[in-house]
Each structure stands twice: as structure tokens, then as C-alpha cells.
Amino acid sequence: MMFRIGQGFDLHRTVSGRPLRLGGVTIPTDNWGLDGHSDADALLHAITDAFLGALALGDIGQMFPDNDPRSLNADSRELLKAALARPEFQGWTLCNLDCTVFAEAPKLAPHKTAIRESLAGLLSCPMERISVKAKTNEKQDAIGAGKAIAAAAIILLEKN
Image (cartoon, rainbow, N blue to C red):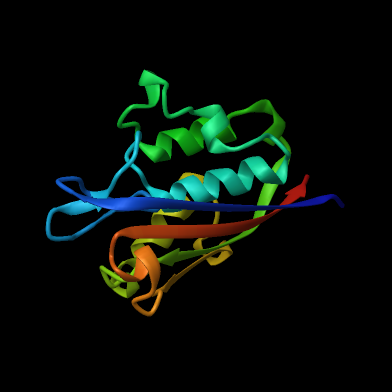
């Protein structure tokens, strides 16, 4: 058997007037979300980087540069699907995905199941293979001040 591990990380500043999307789920806020060229779904960006990293295929910024008008306001679910459609991913199965969102607000506990369900649907795998955790930064740095949200992901792939 052959296994590959990938890890990803992403961080976006918060900004008013945009929806907050994490893991493909719109999270209710008081009219603020994340700033970015695409929809700025930091969790999906970290997951995409983890997949690309597992097979040494670069990162999301190389595949979808922030100066490319085709990815302006792009749905990060579609970016992940495009990455996984690469021929290099044929014959690989996701063993598990473990991810953490770092945010002072909003509280993500009520949304973790919906995020896991969204990810399971995107990745065509059982929800039991996906872990989503949420942590605050104890009011430290930009994340703790509510000025940013970050996400980290690690995956294990197995060659069929």
C-alpha cells in the first residue's frame, strides 16, 4: 500500500459586506465575511492545499492565482473540484481529513456538522472520515481580535 500525507493552511482578513463561507457553508454573521480574490473560504483553501501538497502538485495560489480574473469571486467548492479533477488524483482514496478553524467569532460549534456534511459531499466520502474542530486564539493577535480567520487541514490519501 502507498500512502501520502498533505497539510494546508490559509488565513483571510475579515471584512464587512461579504458572506462568511467555511467548508462550503454560509455561516450567519452581522454582515461580515472574509476578504479574498475568490469567495475566501479559508477552510476549503486549506483543504485544497492539503490535497495538492499530498501529491507534490504545488498550492492553490499556483493553480488559481489571485491575479487571474477567472477566479475572481470564484466558489471555492468549484476550485477544490477542479483541483481534484486533475489526473494525478485518479486512483487515490481519502482515508481521513482533519481540519481546524481558528476564529474568535462566530462560534462554530453549531455549524460543525453542516460543514462536515458539506465536505463529505464535496469529497464523496463518508462523514466519519472528516473531522472539523474550532479554536479561538484567546483574544491574541489578528485572529483573536476578530480581524482574521485561519484554517489548517491535514489529509491522508491511500493509493488504490
